[in-house]
Every structure is written in C-alpha cells, then in structure tokens.
Image (cartoon, rainbow, N blue to C red; front, side, top):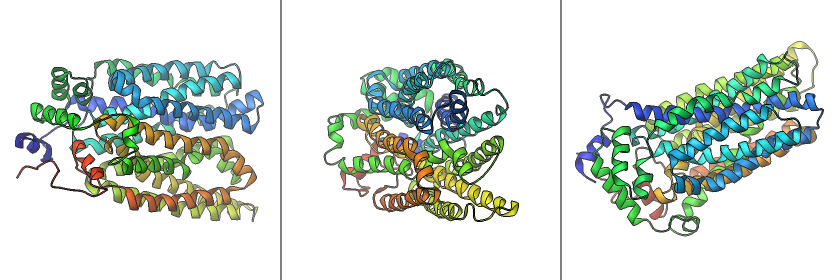
Length: 482
C-alpha cells in the first residue's frame, strides 16, 4: 500500500471532515435500523391489543411474533447471496420497498393468520437488511470511523424501540380494533421517506471492484472518502480480491477461516440466547409478571428502559474506535450477568408483600434489572455484533459471513420469542432469567477466548489474523506512515 494512502488513513486529524456522502450513507442505513427497532419494540405492545381484539391465545401471539423471526432467518440465509449478486445499494432499495409494503399490509390484516403471513414477509425483508446494511456501511466509510458508523445502526434500532413503546402508550385509550393497526402500519413512513436518498447514494467501491467496474469504483470512493489515495486504495482492493479464492460458504468451513466461522456463528447465537429479545419484545408481559398494573404505565416503563439503553449505546459509539472491541464487549456481558442475578432475586420476592411500599420496591428493582440488562446488551453485544459481522471476513466472504452470523442469531431469537411467554407462565421469572444468566456466563468465556481486537485495522488486514491461527502477525499488516 502506498505511503500517501496510508498517511491519509492513519492520521485521524480534526481537519479531515467527514464528506456529506459518507454522512448520508450512515444516516440512510440507520433509518432502516429505526424501522427494525420500532417493530421489535412495537410488536410486544401491539400483541396485547390485537390479542384483545381477536380474542386469541398466548400461543397464537407467540406464533405471530416468532413468524417474523422465521422470515428473518430465511432473509439472513439468502441476504449475503443477494448483496453479492445484485449489489449493496440495490439490495437496500428493495429492502426499503419491502418494508413499506409489508408494514402497510400489517395494518390491514383481517385475521391473525393473515398477520402471521405478512409478518413472515416482513421478516424476510428484515433478514436481508440485517446482512446488507452493516456490509454497506463497512464498505462505504473510512476505517477511522467505521466502528462508530456501524454502532450508529444499533443506536437507530434502540431509538426505534423507544418510539414503538411511546406510540403504544399514546394509543392506549384508542379502540383496540384500531390502535394496533396504526402502530404496525405507521412503520411504512420512514421506509418511504428514505427511498429517494437511497437512490442517490453510490454503490460501494469494493463491490464494484469485485465486479470489475474500476471506473465506477473510483467515482464511488471519491464521494465517500476524498482523503484517501484513490488509485492505491483500489489497487489494494483488487490485490486482496485476487488473493482470495472461493467466495462460497464452503470456504468458511475449512482452514484458515473455520475459526472465524465458529466465532461469528457462536457470537450470533449467544447474542440472542442470552435473552435480549425476551425483554425487548415482551417487557410489558414481564412487568405484568412483576405485578405492575396499568397498560400505559407498563408501556412507559418499557420505553424508559430503552431510553437508558440508548444512552449506553451512544457512549459505546463514541468510544468503540478508541477503547477497542474486546473491552467493550466483555464489559457489556458482565453488566448483563449482574442484571440477570438482580432479576432472579426480584422474581423470587414477587408476592411476598402486598403493601404499596413493597410493591413499589419490587417494581423499582425489576426496572433496574431490566434497565441494566439492556445497558449491558447495547453497550456490548448490541454495539459490536454488527461490527464483527462486517469486519471478520475478507471481501468475497463478508456478506456470506454476515449471513452465517445472522442465521445463528435469528435461530436463537426464534427460540426466545416463540417460547418465552410459555416459559414465563410455566416456570416463572426466576428460572427463566436463571437460564439467561448461565448463557451469559458462557458468552463471556466465549468472547474472552475467541474475539479478536480489530480496532484500527484495515478490512484487508483482518483476514491475516485468522490465517495466522487466531494471532496477529503484524509483519503482514498494512504498513503505516512514519
């Protein structure tokens, strides 16, 4: 790599302002994150309303909620292929269209079965976006801000969750046959608004290079990173792609990338099996199990948890490119473990007293436990899973690697969303969160053993970590300017 290019990459000077196109890439992609987060927070509240409207069982509500995850799983499986075949930009355009259409159809569902089918297709759209969005961001912004831009997607998802619960609280007094339709259908608005901006964004230079379209790649690179040595950067991309063989799923199942495959699949599974979506989707029901009364109060408490989580993920976004990936991830999981033990203690004491002071104390400790859990998650897993999804593999395997991570993630998500209400009703909150605590301890040990520190590393350099058996070999790293 040439010295001139490295100088532009390695000097994080204040006068290197982010170009408008790079900012728009982050904002546009993050808007899709708002829709994803909104639905995660919104469906738990809407489920209470349409359950009353249609008179359906808890198991049917679980089915409607978890069907979305089945669609996400299918979308994650094919998302890497779609992003590689048709391009990152075109994939996101169709994602936005898919969001708009399915969200509108949700609002016009005439039965639980129709809503279930529509949410299957909405999940398919989300699954593709969960693969394509992080890859699009990672390939469109400079290394010096890549971590922050990727974490911004999680910030947007948390904001979406807050909006979902606040909107649910505002509609609590509206007729139950109407309010949930408004809640689910309104998510089409940001998807429609963002379409014109997506059309104006450039395709990523790395994908264009993979397709042999160097001149278009040059123009794309000039738009998103004017401080880089364009020709040298493109030369590096071409050299890196030329060195890589395969580009198929089978390549990730053998050395030298088998270790990387185990890491991303394990990370994706542990991110969800530790229980985050039990809280995000079903926190209103968790508060009910803690003897909290009042629909509006339950939704506002759920929104309050997400506000606290938003603060945590913003802090993570500000330090991820300075502090490092591993310390943030290990700290976040540690907070989750402490929170789960607090929740276990809270559920063990539910019902021990019936006076107002005791009930208030139970609500406070339960709220604190759920808030700490969300803080730990968004600070660690929530912020870093997207970063690792897009950084771990070389260019030809990057989208496929993100698909593998999301597939494992969504399978665990389906297990949680499909069975948590039943577990909460049959086993109780203490045992349910006891299981999550055990999974979180396993997650901490897994990350400590396998997670690499990729802070400040170029995407083309990270592959050497896996090729070297899980160790950094700086003799192969991109040379830095003196």
